[in-house]
Length: 93
Image (cartoon, rainbow, N blue to C red; front, side, top):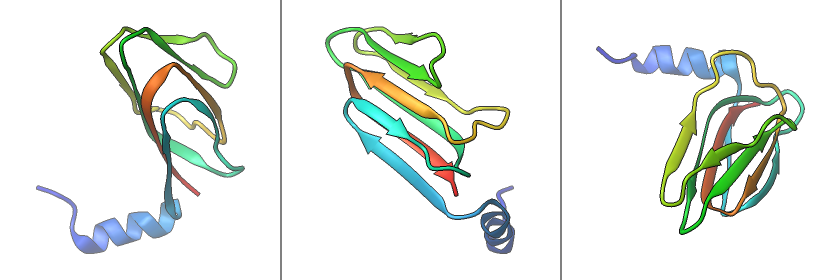
């Protein structure tokens, strides 16, 4: 059973405005106060990597996709998408 419209609206008010960043490759800086709820990336014909906040690179094999839904607070991070052919980052402000 899904959430009611009222429940979704209450969650929206508690969390803040929904925003996203999308593109091909590059750097994404989530603004101060932003809380990431989900991010994904796909690799084209070659291996791609994603680095979050200067951590170890996450390798995405050629032709594959990777999606993450952080379980803890991922606040105002910086993502570096290298040789990806698409990325999407969803967050609340």
